[in-house]
Image 1 (cartoon, rainbow, N blue to C red):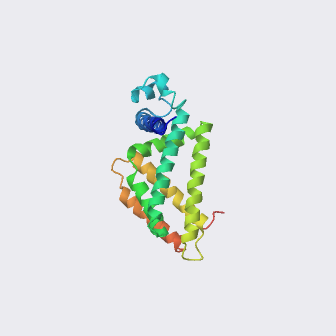
Image 2: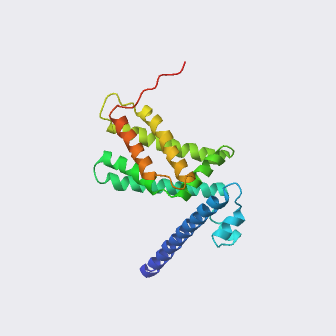
Image 3: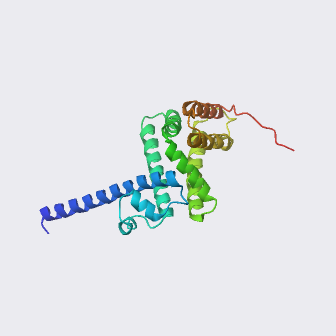
Length: 212
């Protein structure tokens, strides 16, 4: 094969892969809209194919089930989060990067994405595949947050695991509020979350006496 032919062939492969990636993105966007509108459980694969303006046969070439779509959506969210972390950490200030990631993620999340997150949590209570995915992503997020808090703490009294135990319900509550409350005050909720992080890093978390 000549160099020109090889270059042409390589370009064709690259274009094909780019086209496939774009179609996957289009399908994931369509699935998100469909799941938010109809709910995960009520949405059929035919509904999804129609939303994506694709034939069912062509649709199944990319995702074989609703579970596969949710896994793909979760992986896309994970990738976007990783890019955000990488972009902010390049600035050299890990503390600012950590607070920036938390702020940007919860400020930018749409109501539709928050609704979908709630639906995934609900589906995880009865679908083992979705439950496993949810547990894995939450474990990864917890590990990153706990490790980052440990690295950034400014007081020996800071207990990273205890800080996370305070932050986790705040973060989940923020998503619930964003999904369910039409006029939810996201900036105020994010400010509360940031204040809790700052207090935790400084070893100033409130203590709760155990119940007897």
